[in-house]
Length: 107
Image 1 (cartoon, rainbow, N blue to C red):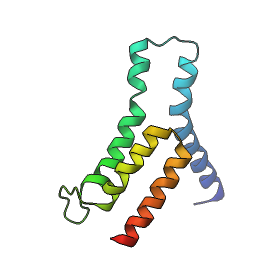
Image 2 (cartoon, helix red, strand yellow):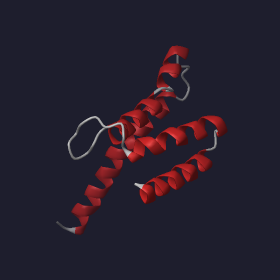
Image 3 (cartoon, one colour):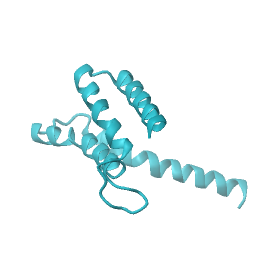
Image 4 (cartoon, rainbow, N blue to C red):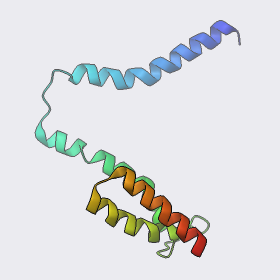
């Protein structure tokens, strides 16, 4: 491939990445969304985070079986309690990392 081909490829990838984000933003800028839709959209980040974390916390990666004794789950519970009490993102990350490090040393 020549330099021009790479340039067109790079520009095309940029457009394909940028347009799906920009067009809805430009279209919905001056529109008022119904409250039920705003409420529903606010649940999407929580659902995505849960979908990403649940397999790691509840299943054994080697056997793909349900496992409640994983260190990740045992660390996640006190970390969640800390996060709910303090509402501190930085503190929650530090507590989670410290607890995971301690669990790794003990187990």
